[in-house]
Structures are given as structure tokens and as C-alpha cells.
Length: 123
Image 1: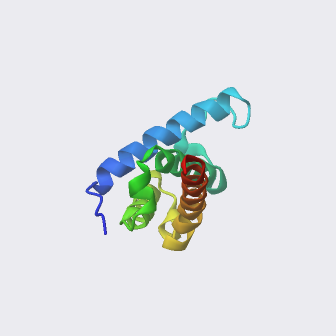
Image 2 (image 1 turned 90 degrees about the vertical axis):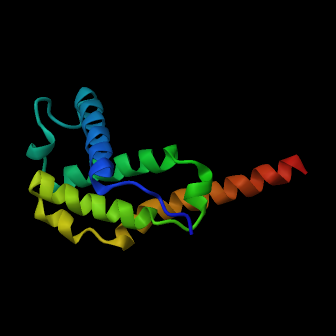
């Protein structure tokens, strides 16, 4: 098992940074009203930002980390729960490892399929 050494505070900073970026993009495209901050959004809107931000960061990780057995799911789950405290949204305290796996597993399966397809082409 590969252990990712990342503090929850650092992971939270990365997540909030990416969520703010996603928020600006959605405000420019008219999906979310301009002038709103992360704290002003509803739980559902914030959850969508969390999910897209987590997906972005998982795709930025090296393939070896995504495909190997790691503590990635645990880090993401704990970070999202901590985000709930930071944004004062208690619903995020119920964010589960199952929800995190639902975000990470499709990416993992996609990369596995792509790796198989590419290795077949090289033979």
C-alpha cells in the first residue's frame, strides 16, 4: 500500500482553492449568480463544487497513485468532512467513504481501461 503523506490542512487548502476556481468559472458561465461566496451557496451547489474539484485533483495525480492501493479515499473523505466545519455546513460531516469511492472509482476504471487499450496497441 502506498501511503500518501498529505496533511488534512494542506488537502483542505487545495480543495478550497480549487472550489473557488470552479465557483468563478460557474459564475462567468451564468450557472451561479455573481457575487456569491462559497459560504453563501446551498449544500447541493457546494457539493457539486466539491465533486468537480475532487475529480480535477484526482486526475492530476500520477496514474500509479490512482491505480495502486492508497489512503486516497480516506484523505478525501476526511478533507470533505473538515470542509463542512470550515464552511459551517453540517451536512458534509456525513460525507462517507462510499461517496468518495463513487467519485474515485470511475476515474480508476477509466485509467485501467485506457492502460489496457494502450498496451494492446503497443504489442
